[in-house]
Every structure is written in C-alpha cells, then in structure tokens.
Image (cartoon, rainbow, N blue to C red; front, side, top):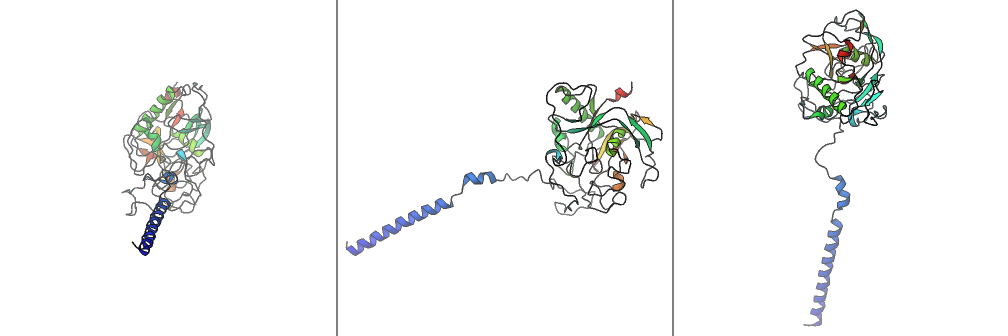
Length: 362
C-alpha cells in the first residue's frame, strides 16, 4: 500500500472516531433529568381545590350545551377555600380536643368532631323576635312574628355538612348533580339527615368526647333562625338588602334594594362567602337546610324553647338555595318539605349539638 493510501486510511479512521464521540456526547446531553421531572408528573386528575370541580348539566335550569358553565366572577375577592372550606385569614382554626376525657355538661366555645372534621360554634342562650314584621317585603302569612326565648346553649355547625363528611360513616348515597368533597351535601331526606346525627352521637360518645346530657341532632327551627340572625332584626344577617356577592342565590332578583349580581345556578363550596356576625357560613342561600320541626304556621304567642308539633306531614327547611330569589333566602324564610323525599332543588343540613328533646319535656 502506498503512503498516500495509508494517509487516507488514517484520516477515515480519525473521522469515524470523531463521529462516535460526537454522537455519544449528543446522547448524553439529550438524556432527561429524572430527578427534576419526577415532581412534575401528572396523575391525570385535576386538583380538588379548583372551584369549578364537578360541573354538570342540570335539566331544571337553563344551562349551556357545553360541559361546563361559564361562571361569572363573584364581586368579592375570595381565595380558593382550604380544607373544609375555611378561610384561615378570617377565622381561627377550630380547637381540637386535647385529650379523651369526657366533657362536662358545659359546652366549649368551639368543637371539632374528631375524624369527621365538622366544626361547631357555641350559641349562647337569648331572646329574639322570630318571624317577620307585617311590613317586610315578600312576607308570608305563615311567618307571624313572636318572641322566642332559648334557655340552653348549643353548638351548631359553622358550615353545611359537606359531601366528604357525609361519606365518613361508609358509602352513603350521593345524589348531587355537582359533586366535590367541599360542596354541601344535598339531595338528602330528613330521615337520612337525622340518622347521620345519630351516627355522630355514637361516634363521639365512643371517643369519650360527648358533653354529658347532649346529643347531635338537627337544630330546631328557632335555634336555626336565632343563629342565622346573629343578633340582627332585619330581613337578613346582612341587613334588609342582600346581593349575590354576599350569598349564593339568583342574583338577578336580590333581596331588598341590593344591586343585581351573578346567578351561578349551582352551589359553591362551603365557606366561599363571608360569615355572619357569629361566624356561621352560608346561612343564606347555597342549599336549603333541614330543621327538626314539623311545619305549621307560626303563632303570635310568646314561646320558650319551642320544638314544634309532635306530628305532621311536612318538615321545615330554612335558608333558601342557589336557584332561588333573594327574598326566599331571608332569615325567617321557611319551606314545607316532605321528610321522606330527596329533592333535586338542593336540600342539605348542618348539625347541632344540644340537649335532646326529652330534656325539654321534663
């Protein structure tokens, strides 16, 4: 082989080695960094913190044909609600029981049901005007105003019972069109709501945390309205006027002289709107709430610790709902509902911890 041919052979060999080294270097640079990408891998599920979670079409409202509703922004600036819908900037965390020592008959100022996560607020005894005055707009004949005295303190849920809390005692039926852990549990019958309260009593009693002489139950109508009013005498806890930036209802028909606002046509996570003066959320709008009482027209006679009639066909629901006009969400608004029916208009509940009915029969 001539020197010229040997020189060409050496050049070809050097070029081949250079190509191999270049390819190896390029492969090394293009290799993904697994340590940094592993934290960004999506599991294919959207965050439960998204307010738009669980949007569904509802046949009884005028929704668009798309899979999601085009929701207007509320006129108040509210961050995404944290666990159980509590806005930690405006409310201190509920106090957890520090030990499993049986509580005395004296109720604590706040109480959080272990495991279930339901927060309750103490309501002190007092006297108030239940019902509506004759000159209140949209007043109904069964809202006769009268004086009521509540002699016993009680605790009531700061929020409506959520769908996540509803599932604590096992796989219970969830008939909600709009599903999500922090959305209010609606579509429950009065009997299902009372059974949930009995389950809570058993659960807390086994943990040796049930205050002596108290049970979990639905609030009486008087207890509910007293807590809703929070010391006010106007049509709502926010005054005689209330817009849909303060509660979830048909904002095109506000209460009183409030300006028209958004009509979401769906519930909101509990705690989305500001609470009343006693720290209770969504007492107006969102979903109707079951009370203990049999429905009957309110009377003008003064009452003390009323529990209503012993029997009757309908039970009382209070508070109004997201599909209703503002005046239907007044503090005294009341609706007659059959206790065995699961209504698709959105009826939920909040729990109370107080004396049993037998206590008042002594």
